[in-house]
Image (spheres, rainbow, N blue to C red):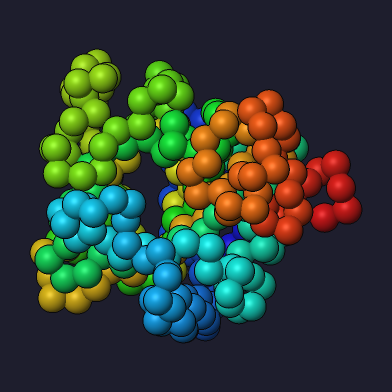
Length: 269
């Protein structure tokens, strides 16, 4: 893995709210990640009670992408890949925090002819509010305009708020502009990426993805990181039932079993 950052890259992330690392996976590392994710997804979707589609029963929303959450808990291979302290250090340095925990991972597969993903902001949905929330999204296939690459509205992480996240369903790809009309003139950045590239995305940045207008799936794998001192806001979101049951608003999210510390400048990593 390419885990080096320059001051220019950190400055770019702070200004724009995202940073693409073109050569994140090097050599055979790409096939290692592809195989690990494919294996974990196959195991996950075979479980009768697996959560592998989107929330709710809307058919349009279900055809945005197939989603498998927390594969690190069922796949030792995924666990070894994503709980790497070097990866956690990258996230911490870009987010500007002393350390990060893994909130959750998820594989996202846009199947052939899948619907677009509307513009949205992630952190308003999370069980913590923080401008230091950060996601790392890894392309396991080439992500193109034709098969549903990501789109970013650069700089929107500076003006988004914790109350509005946007709707991922069929109400309209630009529905979020009703809440943020000042964003409608921002030129979207189309993030076409080669397989093996990765992109860090602020949890407060507006982003979307196009439809998959091809006959092949577009695979991606993402990790959502929270600051090591994140505070519970009362929302369950993707927290495991056993974690949520023990929490009250204002508690620190520090469950080492379910929200593992990936890296901390205050610890021994």
